[in-house]
Length: 185
Image (cartoon, rainbow, N blue to C red; front, top):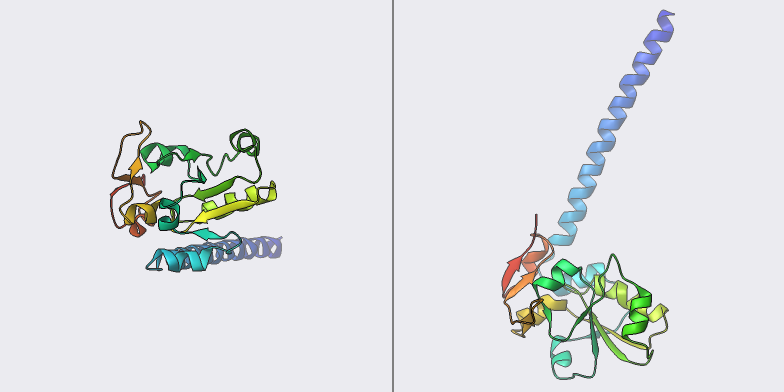
């Protein structure tokens, strides 16, 4: 009986010890991942590290000089309400609805530009559009941050020009160089 008690106590301590190691390892992994993503100094650095380049890019200057595109905003509604590019349609990311897209853009040959904060979420949504059969889909390089950093106009939910840009959170806000940074922590 004594041996059974000692063995169980040792197993309990070993489990607690293993849990502490696992917890420390997970914390370290989270720190390293966050540091990796946000130690990048520029939008091009982040896009190079996080995007797969499965969707062709369009620059903000190219988009500004060509109004033939349907512009889809892949950010969440709260971000879109703070500001968006003029004439953009919010399709979201978490609640992206392919049926809604089919009603907004019924012609699969329509020229579409998708954007988000800097171009990561928009790549994912653009990939989904391509899988749905859309033929002319581009990702806005640098997203709304690069749009604002280039001094182009953004509007709020009332279609009034604004300098406020929802930057998702404080970490991502470092990539917005111009405008008023809005985020929740």
